[in-house]
Structure formats: structure tokens, C-alpha cells
Length: 295
Image 1 (cartoon, rainbow, N blue to C red):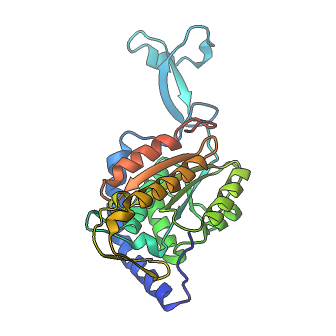
Image 2 (tube, helix red, strand yellow; image 1 turned 180 degrees about the vertical axis):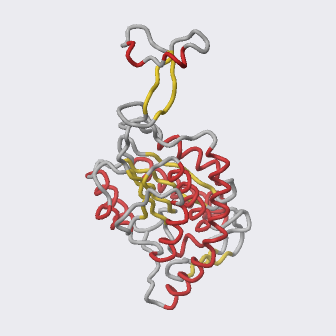
Image 3 (tube, helix red, strand yellow; image 1 turned 90 degrees about the horizontal axis):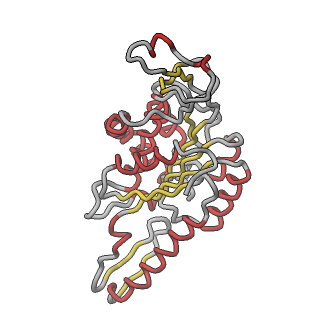
């Protein structure tokens, strides 16, 4: 789960590639956000506040002081004017940009990295439209600007992928965190991060990015596998003989992610052969779930 090292030639090249790709990804992210936006209004709740939220029917037994008589007169039904509860929460985003995320098979629509970035920017767009504060892990200041997606894109170009263990140093208690990764890094590092976030009583949303070839292992015959992180090679004489063991290991990996969840946490699977809107809709449902809930 470590990020690129910006001091190495490889890190410099990765940063330049990221900066070049972000404008197009930002356009795509806004299109995705626009598709989802019509049915989502952020995490607004009724409660004390200054801004009007909605009218709702008057309920028998409640105080009549909340009735909006002008609205009620339109169709002879009593309506209560609700105000929006002020929400002080911030959503922090972390996008894994390590070497394994750059993978794209012939079965995929895009690379894992591009899907992760599109998803993060689309979520930033939605959150900023809804008046939420959104921040990038590793950066001290979240933004409440309406152009939050563009702000996050610029910060990504500057910061790249920060070690996610920095998250607790930038978050406040009870903030939300969205971690977007294939989660193929060291398990000990991941477990330590989850423990720190649980201590902050954060609501954490894990978005697991996968390529379809990683889910199906459709290999047969002699295949040379390369570790994108270390460059190590492993040759299989009959790759099909490895399928059952691989898929069992893959299932165990996912079960570890799912079982790591605390109350209010969520896990969402995002495949690179499926539209980003599907994942975004699923995550929006998790973000708007009542506090203390979750799967």
C-alpha cells in the first residue's frame, strides 16, 4: 500500500504521467458524477440549522409550531418545514498509486489506477456539490469549495499517493475515510492502519479495485508472471493447475478485508470491466447510511 517514491527516476516519471492523465480523468469523473448526482443529496439530515431542507407531512402528536401554513394552504394538507442539520464531518480520500494499480488486462475497460482516480474525483465532485468538506490523505486542509474535484486533482498531481498510515495525522475524530486500492500491500501495514482509524472512531469505506483477470485466473499452459512491485518473475509450466489454489487465496484476501470492518464501515468491490457509476452509487449509499450503521 505504499506510494511512489518521488525522489527516484521512476517516481518522477510516474508523477509526470499522473499529472498528464488527470485532466482527462477529471472530465470523465465529472460525467460519472453527473450521472449519479440526480439521486443523491449528500449526507443531509433534518435538525438544527439555518438552511431549508424539505417539506414533510405533519405527524399527529408533534408540535404545531413547525407547520408551514403557506405551503399547507396549497392542497389542504399540513406540512412541516424542516431545516438541514449542520454537519461538521469531513470525508478524506486516499488513492493507491502503487505499481500494482497500473495493471490492465485485455478484459478490462481501463487500468486499476485510472478507475481509482476517476472514482475519487467523481466522489469529490459529488461531495463538494452537496456542500461537504473533502480532503486528501497527506494534506492538512480539506476543502469546502464547489470545485472540490479540481482541487483534489491538483493535490493529487502535487502529492501523488501518500503512505496511508499518514491518515490518522490529518483526520479528526469521527471523520469519514474512503480508501481506494487493490489492497495487495503488506497485511501488517493494512491492519495497523485499520486499528488507528478505529481508534479515531472513523467511518471507513474500503473500495477494492480489481481487474477481471485477477478474479478469474483464465491462464493455461506455460505463463510467466511478473510482480509489478518488485519485478520478480515466476514461471508456471501448467498455469491451470494453479487456478484452484490462487482463487482460494484470493477469496481469503477478500474475507480478511470484509472481516476487518467495524460498525459503520463498508466494503465495496469495483471491477475495471464495469462502469464507475455502479461503484459510486453503492458507495453513496454507504456514506448516507445512519451513523453507527454499516454492514
